[in-house]
Amino acid sequence: MSKDYYDILGVERDATPEAIKKAYRRRAMKVHPDVAPDDAEAAEKFKELSEAYEVLSDANKRAVFDRGGDPMSGMGGAGFSGFGGGFPGGFDFTNLVDAMFGASSSRGPRSRVRQGQDALVGMRLELFEAVFGATKPIKVQTAVVCPKCSGNGGEPGSEPVNCGTCNGSGEVSQIQRSFFGDVRTTQACPTCRGYGTIIPNPCGECSGEGRVRTTRTLQVKVPAGVSTGIRIHLESQGEVGPGGGPAGDLYVELKVEDHETFRRDGDNLEMVVKLPMTAAALGTTVDVATLEAEWADSAVEDRQVAVEVPAGTQSGTRVSLKGRGVPKLRGGGRGDLGVTLLVQTPTKLDDKQRDLLRQLAEARDESRPAAVAAKGHKGVRGKLSEWFS
View (tube, helix red, strand yellow):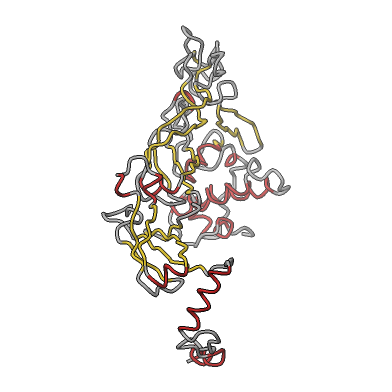
């Protein structure tokens, strides 16, 4: 025979009936006229595919074909009244989809009540709020249950009624006649949109959706030690779903503002204190305001700390104050407060001050100091050699 049914289905000659059925359904999804309307040869391909399946799915016809005979002789076109041996009386396109994807096409009426979406909002914090924690209000625009219909979607006193088009099933079927038999497809009911019911008297507040948008004010508890980018999770504080369905979650993303005095470095706080030249030379004690000074709930004794400056302190010296930094978000303890001392050289001197400094320079033999390279200074060539080694 001129046709090779095994080749048409793409199976081996010893293929099992199950393999033949799967191959047929897989190829039918590609060549059926309703699936490939732009293919001018789709009808002919589908006819040929159906013929191959009818022969190979029937043990007697397959045996005749394997012996080189004509399995279709004397049968005319009777074999194409349906979709092969497995679908007598017409082709149900929906059943084929079910077989292909292992799911039932009978959706049934879908619920009007659905889960709401999550929401994301931003919150700005002052540095002391991020360090010590705070409870702050935030305004959120979200969907809430309609106060008029309580999520029902209809005016008070009214109830949804069964859809007359689908009789409450939420889906309708269409049968189209073709050369190959009746083709039935199932889709969501266009009248009720698959719900199975209609709302004859929609709520005037929410237009039948069961929810309305409004602005709510929430109190958000910010734990101590948070930083920019951290999100606080508030369960069931997001969007209420259609039909008054369960609300999604709300995520509050934090952004910590820069501070004019303190800089955060992980769990440490850093600050710079300007120091007169004379104080650095003679040594002194400097009272420094801590970040606690901006926090109303802090103890008074914690709002200021004394920093000991030893005599001869050089500009850039960093003094570390233990336990004065940021509380650790996970685990106990706090980081440190680093105080960098910046020694300032006076720029405006009167005659008396200038004379005193001149006398000091003469006493220290520093009137014309010689240039002295810093210890460990290797120059450009030395640094390059060290880097490459």
